[in-house]
Image (cartoon, rainbow, N blue to C red; front, side):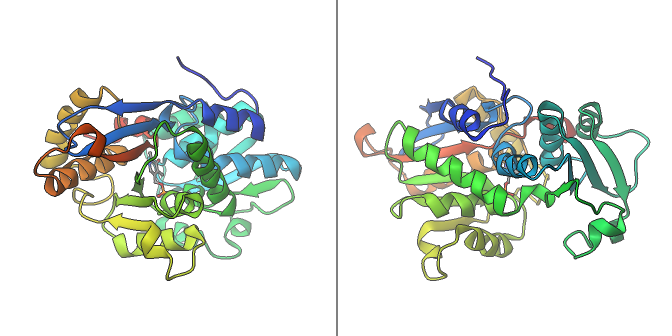
Length: 316
Ligand SMILES: *Cc1c(COP(=O)(O)O)cnc(C)c1O
């Protein structure tokens, strides 16, 4: 059943998160693993996946402070831009998206959606875009004032991390079994780190790096986890070998794996994030378990489906 977030409130959002289904996957692709996939792509068909969690506290706080415009930034295929535009339209905020690079003659499908959702797109050169984290960036663009609520690229702020913590807490409440590992695709590493912040110490949070910069992701995830440095390695592990050539890159291995995975799970996945996490888990479980363990001995693992399906239009 398709559900939509219809009301901007903590209660409604938490309820929606509690209703996100877990799907058990029985497949030889994951030997020795009792695999469950949490379908956070279904929390809302348009404000989807981990980007919904990163936005909720931003939106609640913006409303509380009387802000009427959400300002954020991203690239032409940003799931965060897409989710922010959709959420603005749904909950009555104006939205402005600062987009990296020149405006192309034809917008990406993602940016077409964003405009359709009512987002004002402003294209800035890569040189200017590089300064997005500097003080005075928004003022330079004429976007300073009481009415604006600023969200950094990817939703990577403290409010974003709080939203992911809420996800972690809901998972504690609703998990169908006791998991020993969580697997999640890692871009900035915020989702990995913020999940680890609220996850019991005996659960390992595995972030599958979808880009080449895995030490940077490890560091960022550690920062968002809020743990002391000597605690971090226990809770978080970054799997670095499954980026398939880099961010938004697709290699032969991933292409071959995608159809096998689709058949095994019957779950639509995005190429840029969740599919790479699935690939890593599948290959590593095959390496680690030459003989499949009997059902009661299998390792209980939760893979997060973090959404992003709209991005598949940009692949291939
Ligand atoms: C943004 C995104 C991620 C990565 O989240 P980070 O917090 O940046 O690590 C994972 N999956 C999908 C579908 C995303 O859009």
